[in-house]
Image 1 (cartoon, one colour):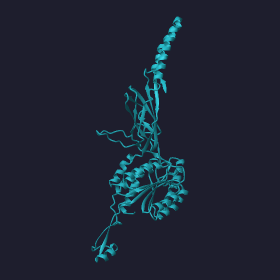
Image 2 (tube, helix red, strand yellow):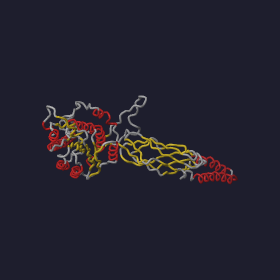
Image 3 (cartoon, helix red, strand yellow):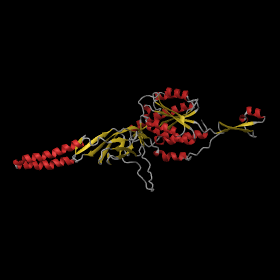
Image 4 (tube, one colour):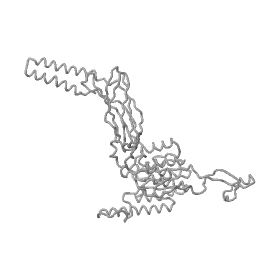
Length: 466
């Protein structure tokens, strides 16, 4: 494809206008004027013919997958290879899906004779997910510069955008260091442990229940069993990806200010990220799941992931190591809410049959729908006796006791607070029913979901509840 450049328009104007004026004033010069104008047009046509295939030899190569972190820029590189024995100056643009953003709409490069050149864009995304970049459109001037020769190179790059944990860095760091939040203290493990460690000879003061009677009979002297605190336990994050998690949950907090190598403060967020889209409840759950997986890895536990909606959407069996963390990240990056009702019965039946070993289950859902909450309360009995289940949900907007908060400002606010009080009361009653079945539940503030879940996890570990 070729398009006229400014040089062609200026050349035609510089030659055509004086020639036309001359022919109007001196009729005898009409032939010469037409010949001069025709020569310019012929030269332009010749340049167009010669330059029409000017980029036919150019090939592009690019990585199949580029990985980004939400809110952080990363480069996208495309290598161009040419075969013609002449140097060409290129302008290039890259087509990307929303919400990917490039630092510049176009970039430039010089393609040497029979050589290669690299195009680079800095890309940032404002939402996690899997997107496409490509094709790449390049442009180069023709031999005489009258035309711009354009070509579309078939490039397809899969851009995978992972959620960032930088916003939770400060609030979660204290918990990882064992300091907790205000009023919390690090808990030492309570009890003697449940995992068998070794046998030793009886020492006065050992409990009778710890004597290994078979070993005592074989050796002819009292032998005691020693136990240690169980370290390797299974932890699963169970995420509700139904319509209940599609509701908005505020906007993301700005990224923390980072420091450059020379100690100067850098920008908190790259350009264009200030207008971040609203987060959903599911986005909060995804971030919390990643933080919990890191905590379980540090504690030496095996961690896994369960995602459900009206059926089982994803299941990553508990494991450890980089491969496990990568598998969970890949499962979460493509996770989006579905506009269907959750099937709690199928979820808990699946967990009952697939998880043979007692595990800690963090169920992240929303139960402010009375009908669905009733179904959940009935279905939880399937796993509550086999596993330790912790139910967590975001506090619905305005779900507070009636007389909490500041003074009301009008009649509409009175009705809103009454509605919020009814929701809060129903959730309180549901929590009491779940506690009667041995299932703790909690209402989480949307900006504190990861740290509150970590507090629950460390409390379970410290008290050996699992």
